[in-house]
Length: 250
Ligand code: GLN
Image (tube, rainbow, N blue to C red; front, top):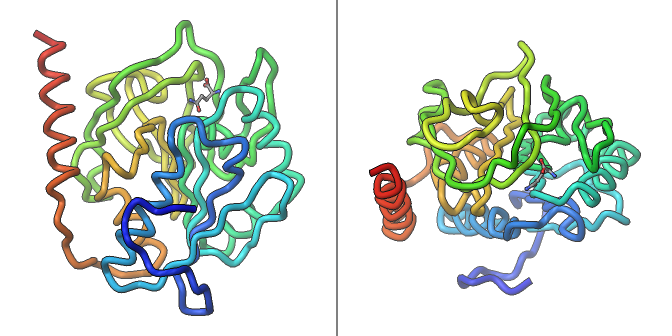
């Protein structure tokens, strides 16, 4: 893996923050590697040793990692990914042991009880109390909204492209209230419970929402606060997207 920023070689070891990117061969439709790079980079800049682990769908998942990332995918790879994750069983055990799980789009849907792919109902991992069906149209475009105030984050900014609609049960909280776009159902977007969090925001999501990346890092490390970083580029990206949204509304 070639990182876009200088990062030390990944030595691993007991004290490293271990980040697993699940099934890059199936679930990586929108540059999902970026979410792993952002987390590793932001940890590294805080002086944390980081180990990034890419686990292909024909490999067993390690269960002792700190953060697990699931990306977006077309229906076929999404259904296959869910089958293999259920058969593997490692993600469920990792989640039960308190690991952080971050799912994007297809990776978010398959954390729920069920979802639809190519017209067929598929079993999900049932780690989040939600299920997905199909909407009247594809949700494509900017996605924004105010995040659950308990998470203490600035508004979500992202891009969505999905056919599914997601319905939340009482065991999860919406990640955000939608102000632009569709998200789950036009009203809410994403979901979270404990240290599990899912979103329809691609982008990659963590490049556009660095505070969300830091939330995952805080959940993983137990830190209440992380030293601030220079956010010039993500602030500019956010300002550009906000201005573009305002322009399309005029
Ligand atoms: N296949 C899913 C859907 O269309 C997820 C798509 C995605 O990950 N972008 O709803």
